Length: 112
Image (cartoon, rainbow, N blue to C red; front, side, top):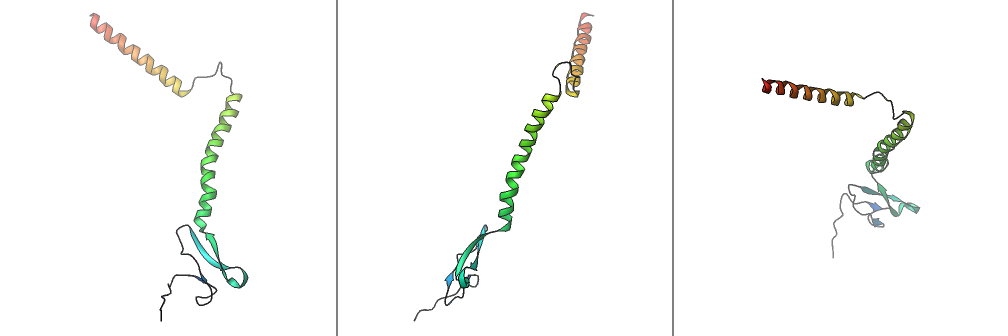
């Protein structure tokens, strides 16, 4: 006489005496009874996995696409010659002027 222990979390389709035992649930998937008379185990993905499969590519592709479209459209609408200097160009120009002024002052002091 053999005794078998029935797992409390195990899913049996349709029942534990007559049916099949479904595989254990994982972090990514679970099983439910389905089919004719609920005799088969059907695989289902967890909802958060399905959402990540949809959202993750959107989060990766959308910024890159937006960047490329802005580069293509904004670059063609602005002329490259005769444009006003940007704030970064102005800061570089002021820094260069300050450094030459400092050199002149220090050169004058050495000459004295």
